[in-house]
Image (cartoon, rainbow, N blue to C red; front, side, top):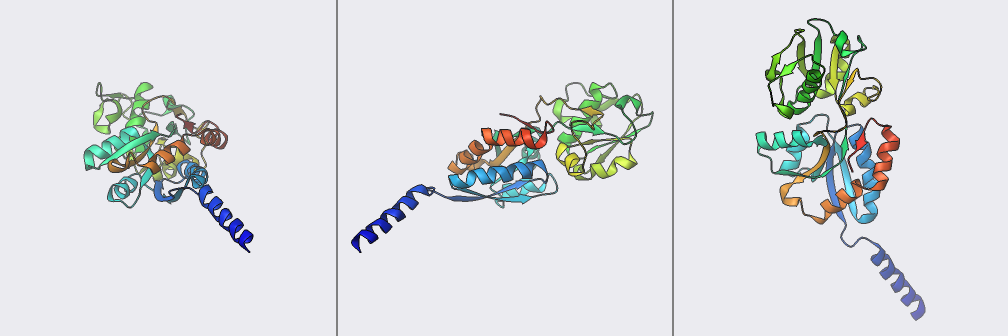
Length: 261
């Protein structure tokens, strides 16, 4: 009897020793598509480390930061740094980026033309209606000589910064998630990779114009500034920026999404 009791006690101690010392549950906001898929893989890898991740999907780019700032989320992973910086500046959020994640080169798609140069005089191009992603498309169009923007505007470019428009293109601002649906009604549309993939588009081969994968638009994990040094943040970042997740991104997205580490 004593021996059985002792062995049972040792087994219990062994199980306790194997269990994570400080389990933590967090809520992470993502947008549907690649961000959600990657976070599901992160969740699986983080569980044995004592980090339980509940993933919540949001269909727009505004609510995830509002929810994080208010404490309804512990972190989010859906946006690039220029967008986060703009939100912090304009809305007074106390949010901080703690790691880079992946890059989604934005593309211009068309059901009517094979090249942006073929878009006719007075043609229509739809772009995201949020400040930074819309600016990304405008910068692409400028690089192809279709527009000229205010000198030095950089990542803050907006429709108001168009100073030359030789083909009198109509730039139509639309909610980012609705851009794929706009394709039959416009000559071209600048669409974020996650929404393009969700709509069945191929972000590598379908765009008639595609952003360089190098640049300021690498996505980030954001947390409340007060949490930036927390142990769970360190675990989340280390798990995300792991060899396993890099391999998952490469295999799953075949170049449409690029890891940053």
